[in-house]
Amino acid sequence: MLKIVKKLALTLALPVLAASSINASEIVIGGKNFTEQQLLTEITTQYLEIKGFDVEKRAGMGSTVLRKAQENGQVDLYWEYTGTSLLNYNKFKSKLNPDEVYQKVKELDAKKGLVWLNASSANNTYALAMRKTDADKAGIQSLSDLADAVNGDAGLKIAVNAEFYARDDGFKPLQKAYGFKMKRKDIKRMDSGLTYTALKEEQVDIALVFATDGRIQAFNFVTLADDKNYFPNYALTPVIRADTLAANPTLEGLLNQLSGMIDDNIMRDLNARVDVLRMPIEQTAKEFLAGVGIQ
Image (tube, rainbow, N blue to C red):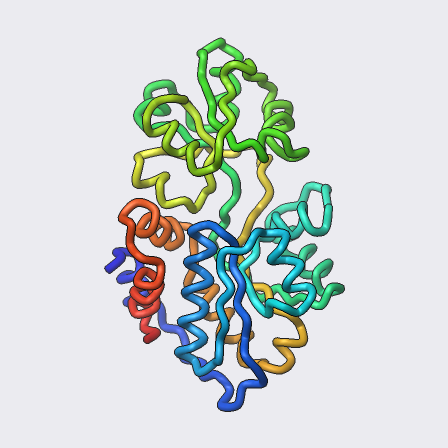
């Protein structure tokens, strides 16, 4: 059993909320096509089934396709990231603090018939990581430290995915914000999952990662502090159609309860079980729920 989940089971004293005895209709739960999202889709599916809901699971969808499916009424509920809605779906570019990001997406998406419930404490934002031994040896703890090292011609190589390299809020403006510029030959573009492997196998010195990825801890990486708060907040939050919630009002309390159980450490641990230990997603979800007293 997960160490953190065991701790939760001992420390969480959450009320048990019962689902309505008569649910208006089947709840369609969507999810994106990567480990964290597949886990949350499965956890939510099992959780709501335990609470008496009739659920259909639609996992493995692309981000834009999933969002459109929810807006069109084909998906009732899924877990979204505040920064993704703000930047990708609402095209809002002004700099906001985490609380402001949440309030802004809640406001903007309400106009589209979507309700943002309570945000979890998990923030799956972008981060740059190094092997811990190398970061300690070089004295690099923050992105400002990294900038100093690059400007000092340390010859560091970085792995980033193609999307982050090209996007308007990606790697080029990050370099501008921190006042450094890496040589083109030192920037390796690859699929997201391969950046972890490249760093682990010492093909590069730095890698773009996602903050709640289980491989960070498993591979003894350290994420560099974003001391200028460049990266937006990506708080993981259940988002539901307003009409679905109106028909099933008990979902708000149930999903807020579930959201309150999720934080960075929990997500890293769950992700590691799947990506590193190769545990089945269904089993991982079941063990998590059992560990917090839901079965």
